[in-house]
Image (tube, rainbow, N blue to C red; front, top):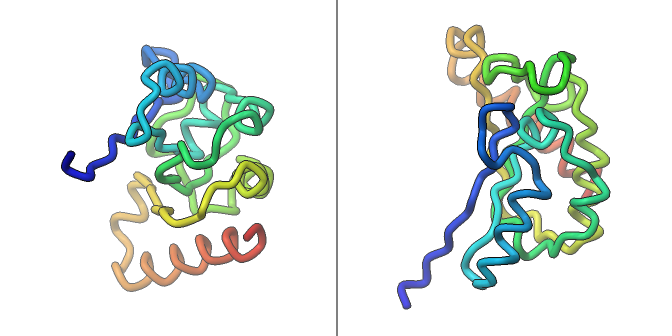
Length: 144
């Protein structure tokens, strides 16, 4: 009625009640509404070991936004938000995630850089913007 969409974001942390892509996508399928989809945060996807195979079975139209980030290499379940790093500088298989998104028909129309790294907060905002844009553009250009 109002043209709004709801995007559910699962959290890749052991304490989260919905912490994998498969769980979140199952809920979205159960809801069965065109305006309800997912936010796929690469950090959370990696954080609890979500599987590319599950993503490959999804409908790309149900992925409303992707949070692009990377992380240091810590064991599954041990990552904290501040462990996020610039895309392409960590251990998340970003190219594989984005290639899978392309295969399932994701439109690549909503990507946001989401980093909670304390040292990035202390950087000059123009540098954060420049580096962030370069990193995001590189991932998108390679895969779309």
